[in-house]
Amino acid sequence: MPVPRKEINRQEVCPLLLRVFVKKGEHHRPEQFQNRAADLVDDEVHIYTWKDATLLELTQLIQQVKPFTKESNALLHFNLVQASKGVFTERHIGAVKSDTARRGEDDRKTLYDTNFRIGDYLDVAAVVIP
Image (tube, helix red, strand yellow):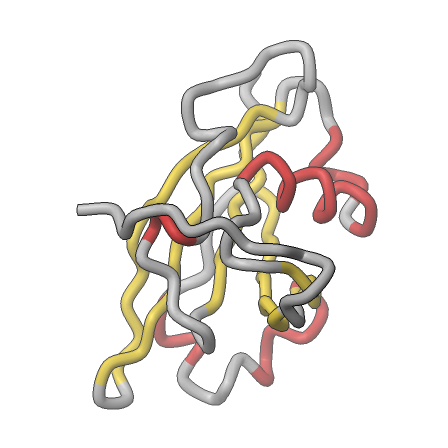
């Protein structure tokens, strides 16, 4: 069940650091995050944002630094990566089309809506649809 949305005044509230791992074609395996994701440095994007950030907003920020996510027929699949007692799990939270003319229902989903907690990661698979 989604957490109720809370208004965030972005002028007064300090942003959080969101660690996002982007891979072309598929998601990373949960065990790849065991070593604090040290082995995934080339795939990592740091985004300073707020819990009211939407998946569309995050997609647009990712596209600024990972050009392959801009392909017109790409679909970005978002997984939330969480640790519990040293074990990492991934859960699908939504998908966003890279083509800005084709919007989807997950575009407006926020980090709040996904039960994101500070310290969680996002794992994004950029899948090109033929």
